[in-house]
Image: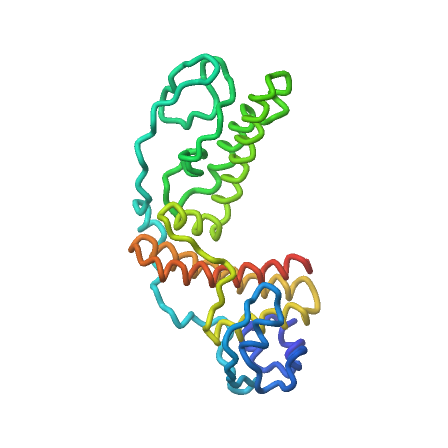
Length: 283
């Protein structure tokens, strides 16, 4: 029954609420299972304390409801000035010609002799790609800066140079690529911002919210039972809404320096992102 409803593209939460589909192994019934079983069924989820709770199709809560932890849904434009402070850049000299770095751009390549410079860990990803150190950035502006750097730093462009400089080019090019991948992904960007603040986030840390765990399980069941691409796209759109919600929640918490709430938002984004990856594999 729920498959037909899902194919008609009625709200996904309603369809799953009426679902009669059996719970996949290791669950023995469709009405009771444990958080330990949910977590242990996926290699990405760590096992936590074994406590039971009930779930059935007639009393299940709406799948994509507003999360219990309400941090507000601010317009990201309100966070335009919520950024991490930068330390003054040290004066740098070219290892090859001893020229002094000029301007505010990071000193990755010498403007005088064009020699690629050794890696400087104090230069962060935001500086490399020329954007303000904050969560709300214009991602579409990053590609141009990334390509500009690769035209100067790519190892293929310095194949006739010394072994030392070829090594510098390989390191710099790899770091620019990592900066681009990190800042273009909302989840990675959020984690990197906290890292710059000295806050480490464990992506694999378990979450003890039963509602979230049940919701992720239902999403995975829906993906497995999806009849066609249209249904998968519908589920993916619902997941994207959740990702956007928790992305905004992170921005609000980060600007308020509420790092525990920021970490909680990141952990939830991680769960939804993994669920979305399962859909991508089937599309």
